[in-house]
Amino acid sequence: MTSIDRLWPDPEGDLDDERLLELTRMPDGPWLRMNFISSIDGAATQDGRSGGLGDDADRRLFGLLRWDADAVLVGAGTARAEGYAELRVAHDAVAWRIARGLPPQPTLVLVSASLDLDPDDRMFAEAPVRPVVCTVPGVPSARRDRIAEVADVVVTGGSGVDPQALRRELAARGLRRVHAEGGPTLFASFLEAGAVDALHLTLAPRLQNGSAGRIVRGGTEAPTGMRLESVLRAGDELLLRYTRS
Image (cartoon, rainbow, N blue to C red):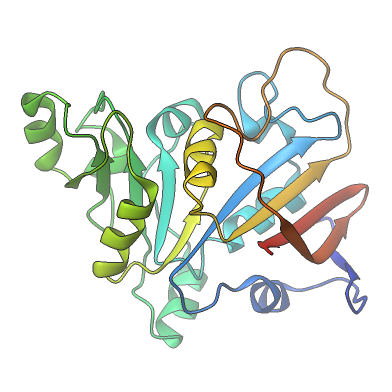
């Protein structure tokens, strides 16, 4: 396993999982952080999937970042493209969560404006916690009723989901610490709404070229100042943490 070191601040070598969790844990909330990977030249995917850019260190941190989350938020298109199954953290993560007063498993929150979802998908059928699906008012009622059999359906926004309203709804359900895993369109809408508190960005040591998009896609420009909080390194890969300044 590739070791992960902290370069800044306060250099520290070969961080174990407990130390990584300590360094990356979210505040009590409400808090929403995004987690993405990008190549040096800005590509967010390889062969259409962000997972193609990652290595074992990125995957290790990706898994650990779910441990302290009340909810894991993802766009439905990204969930399909990345092959999401049921959201379930491992046995050691369950023990860690319970010891800190968290429920055994985080809640999966899907965003889908179309509700073009299969209720028999493993994301629903094998979920240890009933998922939450957020959609828009204009979605066909038949689709909404079908998904409501396997998930709590939240309706908000207009032509698109309202990120701030969704955050308030999740907080009301006790889901205050939200870990978001994309994709780029979801990130754009939340950034435009001022609903992003932090970003974990893995900078993969490669140049992709090609036509892959970047980690944010769509919406209007929303310049947002970010403050660098820490720099981790795994070989030639950098794992960066920013908070909104």
